[in-house]
Image 1 (tube, rainbow over the protein chains, first blue to last red):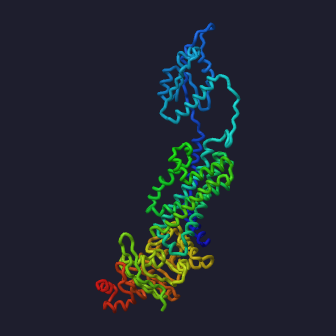
Image 2: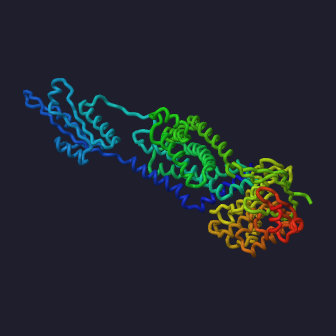
Image 3: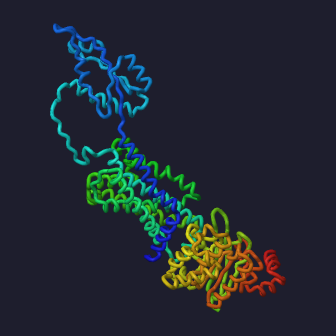
Length: 367
Length: 239
């Protein structure tokens, strides 16, 4: 193998992208744009408006009419996510229909009497219900508030502690590591497969095969050329998430770049391998639903793998991004070192080796 | 004179049932310009691709330059210009030449000198920094020729090299081919144009993957009793 020829191939790829400013911008600007949107979305908290209807008639006592429900009514406190509105039932019903309320809680006429009779008084919670996700959230918040109200005094002092992360850790902190892996994998795969397809269609690959360059030199040259862009992209994404989006980061930057490097080897070779099965750039784009979307859905990107059905879990564990995500989260959130993510590194390396083999056997396909 | 190419009983079939070359025999002497003449689909490009080492024959013996060479040493001595210009469209003329020169082992001053010489040979002075994408078809053909000659190869395969090139430049190319021959290089070029083929020192006439005849133009004409190559081709085809 000749280092000079490997560098010549890598330099050529760098030059090609240097001429292609639009693609260069795409590699950097698109991840930042998407991260900004997601960062804003994750930081936006939903506020739910909930009506409170107290129809309790109370019970007669020697001191007059007593309403136990007033104790609850008095203890209802607004939280950052929940705003209480005292309403009459017809008013609450129309509010729910008009969308000014997300739910209402109604205490019945016999609320106090039931408590006196040691019966459980019915509490009606009516939800707007068109968005199941919002319904779950509002129900959780109502339950939390009502439980506190019914309990009356604080039961005990609760101390909260975190093994990883902390109070300030938000959803974005959890998602940021996977974006680094996802963008690197996505762009390197896409750009390699398109570049290699062009080599085939423009006949330059035929010229290369007629030269002293061997398959390994082509593969290494491609890997080196794309690695430069992938690392620059990752660094920009990382700095952006840390300094602009204020994502919490406790890991070692070099460890992140090492995981990235192994992932890029896999992505470059997967691109070379699959480009052998595409005749034009449109067909390369058609590989996206096959290669990228399942990994975005199943690699623990959004949904935790543990909560998936068994069959999807198997699929998840067959995907390289799953291991890259796991390793990067462990490094960035938990501050782990490479030894502690060695299993992920082994699997990612095995994937990279398999892709090198497949790229090697398919590189001359169709020549 | 010693042969630089020897081909014996060469067969190549493409699935499902295209017989590109059938029991093909050929000998090419060192230091000449050798023409492969035949219509489209006669097997010229397949033969060239086997001789440059990018296609494997199904059957038969092939010797190119020397039987004892490792493939990469042989590849370093061969220049290859494909039928349609095989260039990186988004790179400039100089960057394309620089890339091919580097993978063939040229560096530094020698590389720059060689690139300069070839740019002036193909009359592209002033276009060094133009992306190939912006050039006309004829210009791209000239860049493609330059990239195949950049490493000063001993054996040069040119697949339809003068298509799309104006007649005066075509004549200059032929003069350059002659000077390369004088320096000891061998040129194998394919064409389907009879008058171009007539300029070659020796010719192989191909039809449907078979060799109809091989020899100097005068010999082919006298053997067939014809006045020009077209008639000779028809006579051989009929016979």
